[in-house]
Image (tube, rainbow, N blue to C red):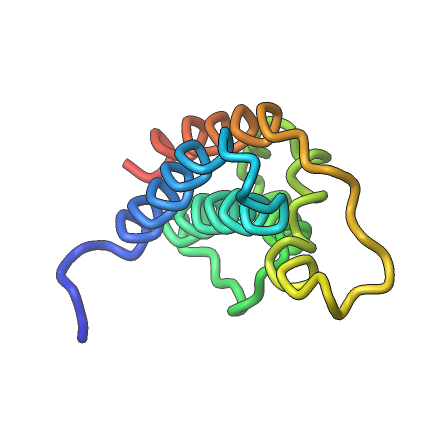
Length: 130
């Protein structure tokens, strides 16, 4: 079903939903790092895709923040804050969600840093999609 809303607006709305869930669940020690990392990765991915879409930059349907940051760079769009930290979120899209299939477990997620980085990315993206 098509919507009359712009793709960047929808992506940012969805990024905000992932951010909300991340912030809501982070204090609960019963929620796994892999689940929190997934929502952090999704929030960042959607915000980056919103900026790319607003700037008419095409992108593949992948869950790779490194790839999206490279597209921003190629399009000469300023990088979001903390790109090196953002790159570490990529494995949470798929790999870490299936932890029982991994031979190596990820480092513990710094929950407060992750929340702050996600906030900064969404704050960076918001004016770029207006």
